[in-house]
Amino acid sequence: MLLASAVVVWEWLNEHGRWRPYSPAVSHHIEAVARAGPRAGGSVVLGQADSRLAPYIIDLQSMHQFRQDTGTIRPVRRSYYDPSSAPGKGVVWEWENDSGTWTPYDMDVGITIQRAYEKQHPWVDLSAIGFCYVIDFATMGQINRQTQRKRRVRRRLDMVYPLVSGTLPKSQSWPASPGAAAAPPVPACTCPQCLLVMSVKATAGPGAGTLQPRKAAPAPPAAPKPPLPAAGPKAPDGVPVVRGSLKPLAAQGGRRQAASTPALSSAGASGSPPGVGSAKGSRASLGTLNRSHLQRLAIAQSRVLIASGVPTVPVKNLTGSSPVNPALAGITGILMSAAGLPVCLTRPPKLVLHPPPVSKSEIQSIPGISHSCRKTTKKQARKGKTPEEVLKKYLQKVRHPPDEDCTICMERLSAPSGYKGPQPAVKPDLVGKLVKCSHVFHLHCLVAMYNNGNKDGSLQCPTCKTIYGVKTGTQPPGKMEYHIIPHALPGHADCKTIRIIYNIPPGVQGPEHPNPGKSFTARGFPRHCYLPDSEKGRKVLKLLLVAWDRRLIFAIGTSSTTGESDTVIWNEIHHKTEFGSNLTGHGYPDINYLDNVLAELAAQGITEESLAQEKD
Image 1 (cartoon, rainbow, N blue to C red):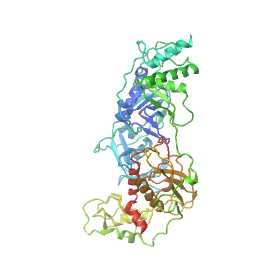
Image 2 (image 1 turned 45 degrees about the vertical axis):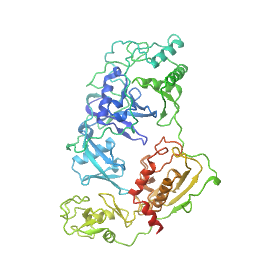
Image 3 (image 1 turned 60 degrees about the horizontal axis):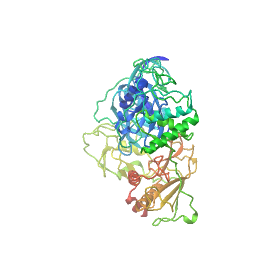
Image 4 (image 1 turned 120 degrees about the vertical axis):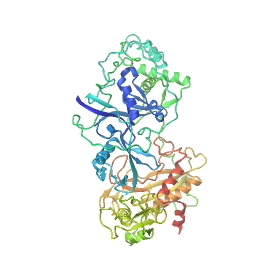
């Protein structure tokens, strides 16, 4: 055990294996229930702290989060951080995603950014903690070191996470204080689950244990389905910024985490865990029931709940290590009922990645699209123009610069450029205006930005992302096949399906890639993707063909799923890789997908005008 002070951050494990923090408000709520001990029931209803999280419940005994509408179970943990770090000051660092909303960084990343910010560093490189990004505090931007893509970042203040002090053990089973006094006896519970346990024990014979009383918990109000929990409600803009210093937590040696709720000297628990044959327990004991009795309990519970009109809820194991057997399903249902929520557990839905087998004679070409295959080889030859000659097409010189900052170097436009890297052959005090969007920059800065990019003759405004010229990418050589198969996608029963097959082999990186001369891997190929064979689906396919020809579908970088570097990854144009279900979020039905992917293609400079350009 260690004697120290720390802030507590509750976190959940996402599908990519990364621990995501709950918001300060939600963490305070979870911590309050954890400190209350068994008297609070051992279940945390997250909707009480954030209405968007209404379907979620945390079971403190197993340290898992349960989503009622999908049955998904995810591990949760309780982590400690230095009180002088970002969570101890209520500082949240966020990046702007493709939909224009703000996503908080993982807690370790946010702490690293805040540490550099407090030391007044001009930028911080996140590669040391496994991310290929640089945060530029001057422009408040995130730069991908491999693709040079830039996103906005921001720093805001939220609530401070809960503070604990005293003895902090590495781990301990819930409840927090086993030695605390037990709650006084209360009348026996008459909920359906406890009655079922009592009836099963009655038929099991003597020695099967006795039913222990518990306080009935009120049922929470129903609420619509929210997205998976991220970091809680968004704080309003304009919150004042506070600087501070970062000090390591000497007594703890940094951050620690507990597999379950640890003892807290600042809050005394009110009871001990329920036991067999003890009046101190808070609900029916299952310890003396054997497997057959548990199975009978699960079956009986399911029948009662289905008969009462309770909707069935599938349960799936996040790791996929084992199926959910009837006994575990029954136990899980009883745990969920601790919050007063009726739950009936059924088998998990099946993942359907591919359509039924299709013979060659059933495959059809796509009307209006010639051929059924596209190949890319090596990078297109670059035009023999200097950066200055390229930019000259897109700029107008400004004789009298406006009284504002250049958003690249953050120096006044009336002063010379503040760029400190390799010096372009342009005077640092020249200023130019982009002809389409009219944003003004130092020519010196624009040339430097162009030299750090793909140098393909195109330019993207760093302020509004307007593209000048034809943007191309660094996709390695490969093949794209496309055809119609005689099966319908969920949500598109009135049409057949367009199947796209991407195949990229492993190889050696070229000069345009992150590590020239080094080999790269290509995992998961061939990759099968699906579109409805509708008018809009065919339009998306035509634009995807343009994106393929411009080498914008894939890139070489670090996989966000596996963490592997120097591998082929998707390049910000989302595809549907799940045919008959939508368990991963990459399947159908998805009524907004076609519109979303058209917007993503437009962000890469690919629109219907691009189709006319390709014909020319």
